[in-house]
Image (tube, rainbow, N blue to C red; front, side, top):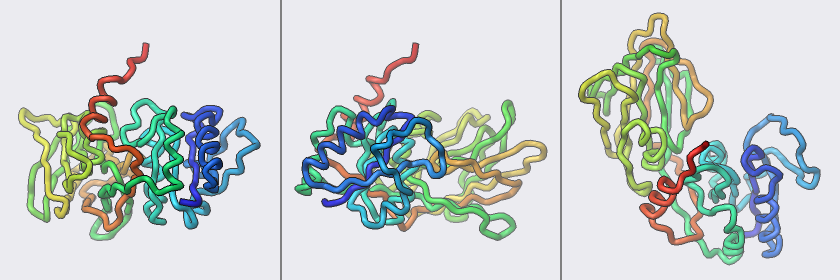
Length: 291
């Protein structure tokens, strides 16, 4: 590996302390480093002059890897761009959980393995998320974690009919529905009561959010299925679609949100031989409580 892009979240890696440590290790190994920010067009105050940040899209075409410094949100934000250029991602946790991150902030010396290719690539399935209105496609996005159809107003419910390959599965009256990948099963879906699925699995997980029903169950489907979530009558209420927690897209009554496995995959760099369930226990049992 000869050239990597370092992409820090300045709100997480304050003062770029972890970024500096990573740069030192990589430069010592003779690896060229390029710097980019994950948030396009955002003005960050008090940026150090020693780093020449360029646009992420300009940095990726010639890169061998993208190193993200932050939490899972930073990795998710960068995943679409990195996937477009077929660049693998290495996450460095400078956040609260960092479930998808490979390294903690104190493990920068392990980056020396990039020079000698002592790593493996783990592929994660992504979702192709599209919105159809009156038969016409009006929105499309890639998602690594999930696609969420949710209400907009407090103390309101929305109705969502869910179909699998065109066949009615269930209807939900409540806060909405989550369709996630195995990677996203430990995120919002888990918080809403959904199952934990190994990230290497090939599944779509459907989880209702605060359904107004005595029995509201999650569904685990084959990754080859096509899920459709159709919004019912809205009236004065509102409904939104969010892919990977990104900017919400406002839905209209009877819009169809079609979700299927994307042709693209996110590539994650693995430097350590860590068991998924050990990571699961460490991340969720050792979380700090804010006081």
